[in-house]
Amino acid sequence: MTVTPDRPSPNAAAAPARPTVIDRFVTANRTYAVTFRDGGMDARPVQKIAVVACMDARLDLFAALGLELGDAHVIRNAGGVVTDDTIRSLTISQRALGTRSIALIHHTGCGLLGLTEDFRRELELEVGQRPQWAVEAFVDLDGDVRQSMQRVRTSPFLLHTDDVRGFVFDVHTGLLREID
Image (cartoon, rainbow, N blue to C red; front, side, top):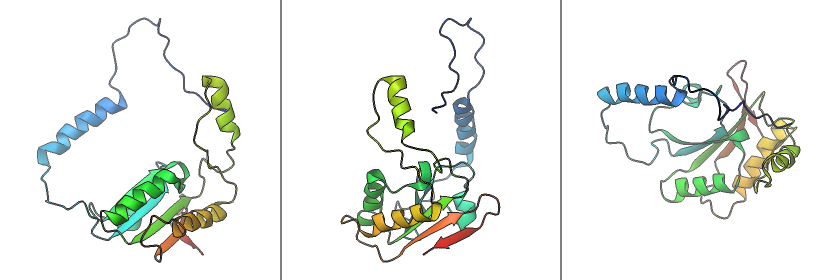
């Protein structure tokens, strides 16, 4: 079942606007910019790696992988799924910006585990248009990592497919488990 957050009624009495999360981002950015100094970094990742991972907010990839700003390209989407757009980003990462290695990271407790393509059907009923994209849900976490590795390794657009590794991140322990 599709869950739609409550939306304010257009007829609701105008109350004083409280700062939104995005307003807080803008304020935080102004504070950040005061001490920001352009370090002259190149757009090419220092470690020559691209990481594809789930968008789940519990994954702090920089901390979990020991990355620093400028070390890696990080490509995130629901499930860390290797879609056409992921291949697009990886192709640009390799061909234009010099990456050679790819790490794929799925995680325990993923919202796509057990979700079905019924999600698309429900969206179609709700909004009157069927999404053109697939949900890419899965029931076998390790199997989906293997499928993602296979999609990367067989893409004709990627130059470097010899160093592609897949992992499952455990959201309770913080540990990576490699998938063969």
